Image (cartoon, rainbow, N blue to C red):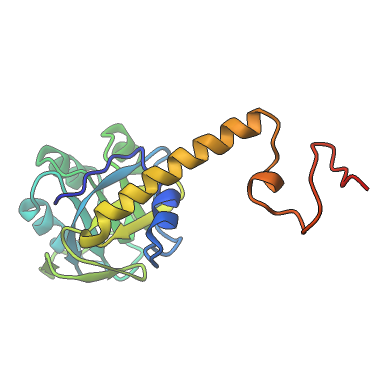
Length: 212
């Protein structure tokens, strides 16, 4: 993969820079406070309530990848401490799953980032092998292995591999522009001025006086 990224790139900035419908449904949330991840996806399609596909994915995924799994939004504990420890040992960067997970305190202790649609202690079967490495739809967004997945407290975005480098470049430009805006706000400008939000012929002031 030619594009590189780290967790300093926020999902909000990447989404805005992409111009794409690449934000997953808001039900995908961090399993523990402060979780963040970024890396190439390794896709998993499983059966809700069965986590054999995830065990297979941990063994098969290349190091430096993020497991991205469609488990049919099922409210079961598909993933917990043992799988997280195994994944971390094999060099995987995290998990994004449309389905439930458990052992959230232990996941935080391992510093293994997980984003899931629910938290549940309900047990799972281990009968369905699932499909690994094939395109999936994750919480409304198409994802292929090698696409770039980024997740933080605001949500999850999945960037097509072919477009990732240009999106990151535009995101960097947006960050520089936001730093400029913050500087100008410290100097006394208002957001009305900086974003040209005043009606034609009017000016803003810190006191709200329109100059009339």
